[in-house]
Image (tube, rainbow, N blue to C red; front, side, top):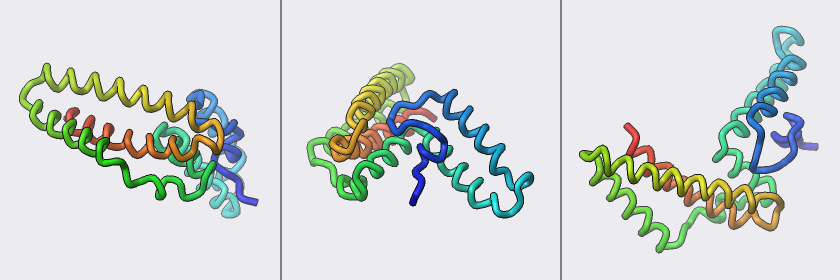
Length: 156
């Protein structure tokens, strides 16, 4: 039986996680599998625990991971986004590029993109409560990645 990252850390499966609970569960479990205390046999368990923590601690990785748990292969199956969205993303990239010399314009675009990312996160969390939302949640994950790239262009 395969243990998923949520189970490994004793957390309920979902897009929303309490960061303090995640850290507490991680630290508690690390104490039980630390290779210095439990020998070489614990190395595999410690590595799996570290991977689970790494994925679940990052909101966007957690969403993609959860979509895959609900529907295997969904992230790959949804990576081709609609042309309308891609055109909007390209326009945003161009707008971000054009704003490089204006701090006020960059700040305005950055605020809009951060707001959009927050909205995406809320929608994804709502969708990924069960397998029925995996497809739409995965599409939003891919779209959010474009917004993240635009933000990276804005923030030096």
